[in-house]
Structures are given as C-alpha cells and as structure tokens.
Image (tube, rainbow, N blue to C red):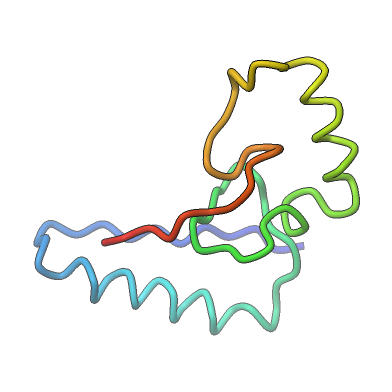
Length: 90
C-alpha cells in the first residue's frame, strides 16, 4: 500500500488558485495507482470519502458513534455520520 499526502505551501495569496489546481492535478495523476484513503489525511475534495476511509465498515461505525457520542461532540466535515463534504475554496 502507498500512503501519500499532498501538501503545498506558498506565501503569495494571489497564487492560491494556481496551487490548488496543481495539487488537484497531481492527485488526479496518482489516482490510477491508489485505492482507498487514510482517514488521518483528510482530503476535502475526496468524493465518496465514507467508502474511501472506512470501506464496508462505515454504517457499523456510525452506529457505534451514535452510541458513544450521542451529542456528536467529536465532529468535523468528514466525521462518522456527516452528510457531505463542503467544497473548499482557495
């Protein structure tokens, strides 16, 4: 298995869009060689992140989370039980 993280750092805010596009292009070029995703490297553009991070265990994990965290204290955009992933903006 290959685990990778694309990280871009830049100073000039005016180049944000260019750098986001670079990251997305690099990710797209790696896609044919990668399956799944690592949950600790949250990817805000990842489609079907529930399956990519948790596979067939997602529904069971959501059920467990509802039991141990009924108030959804531990949450973020791609946490167990989240409905969708908002599109990030540069």
